[in-house]
Length: 270
Ligand SMILES: Nc1ncnc2c1ncn2[C@@H]1O[C@H](COP(=O)(O)OP(=O)(O)OP(=O)(O)O)[C@@H](O)[C@H]1O
Image (cartoon, rainbow, N blue to C red; front, side):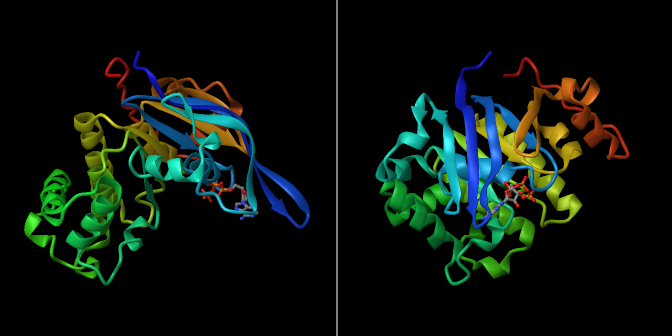
C-alpha cells in the first residue's frame, strides 16, 4: 500500500454567522495516499467545498477552522505561517474549481499566463516557461501553436484543460478538483475526466475529486468518502461503496441514481 500524502484528522469548520456558529464540517478524518484518486461525495451543502477550502487555507471569514489537523507529507498546513503556505499552494497542492475556466485572464495570451505562474513559483525565464507550456499543452492534447491565443478563442472544455495544464506545470503532489467539469456538457466532461485519469497514472499525483455525481465519481476514483450534513459517514474502496455500502445514506444516494455504476476497480494499482 502506498504511503499517505494527505492526512486529515478531526477537521471541524464553522461559519460564524449572526445567528451563531454553523458547524459545516464536524470531526472529519480521512487520508489520501500518493497516486490515489479520492472522491468526496454527498448532496449539496454537506460541506465538501468547505473541506477543499480548508485544505488550501483559502477559506475566508466567516469560515473558521475550529479544530483538527491537515497533514501534507507530515507537515500541518493549519499550523504554517502564511509565507510558507504560499510555497505549498500551487507547488504542492493544485486547485481546479468549477469556475476555473473563467479564472483565466481574458486580456492575456495563454502563454503569458503560464509564464506568470512559472516565473512566480519557479523563477522561470520566458523561454523556460514556453518550453514547459508546450509540454503541458501536448500533455492535455492542445496544439502548441495555440499558446499565443487568448482565452476567448478556446471552447469551455479547452479552457478547463488549460487550467488543468497550468496547474500541472508546477508538478503538484495533490490536485483538488471541486466540481471541475460540472459547467461542461456531458461528452466534454467525460473526455476531460478520462484525461485526468490518464495524466494521474502517468504523472503520479494524487487527486481529491469533489462532486455530487456519485456515478461519475465511482468511474474514476479508487476510494470514496460519503458526507452527510458535515460528517463523513462512510469511507471505502469504490467497489465496496458501490456494491456493498454500509451506511443507509450511501444506499440512499445510490438509489437516487437510475443505473448502477461500473466501478473502476483499481485496487492493487496503488
Ligand atoms: N459563507 C458562508 N456563510 C454561512 N454558511 C455558509 C457559507 N458558505 C457555506 N455555508 C454553509 O456551509 C454548508 C456547507 O457548504 P459547502 O459549500 O461546503 O457544501 P458543498 O457540499 O460543497 O455543497 P455544494 O455541492 O452545493 O457546493 C452549507 O450548509 C452552506 O450553506
